[in-house]
Image (cartoon, rainbow, N blue to C red):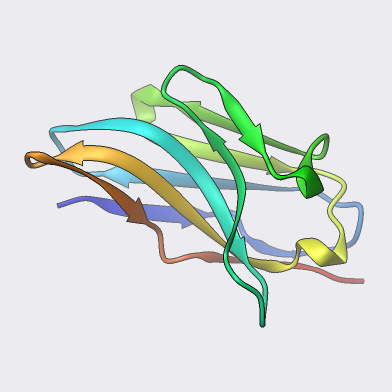
Length: 119
C-alpha cells in the first residue's frame, strides 16, 4: 500500500518562507512525476509545480521565481520551497505523485497541508 505524508504547512507573514515536503511510503514502486497542487476556498485545485523523474520542472506563472520544487529520489520525497509568500498563496497544498505499484501506474494524492499567509 502506498501512502503520501505531507508536512511543513503553517501560518506565515507576507514575504516569509515555508518549505513543504511529501514522502511516499511503501515498497516495490517506481516514481515518475512528483508535484504540488493547491486549492484556495471557493476555487478549483490548480497546479503549482511539478518535477519529472529526470529533474525537469514546470511552474504556474503565479509562483515562478518565488517557489522551487525539488526531489530526493533516495528518500521518495518531493519538496516545495516557497519564498516571498503572498496572501494569495493561502490554500491547502496537495502532494501528487505518479507512480507504478502492484502492476499499475496511478496518481496518488496526499491529504493536504494548510498554508496561510497573513499578517
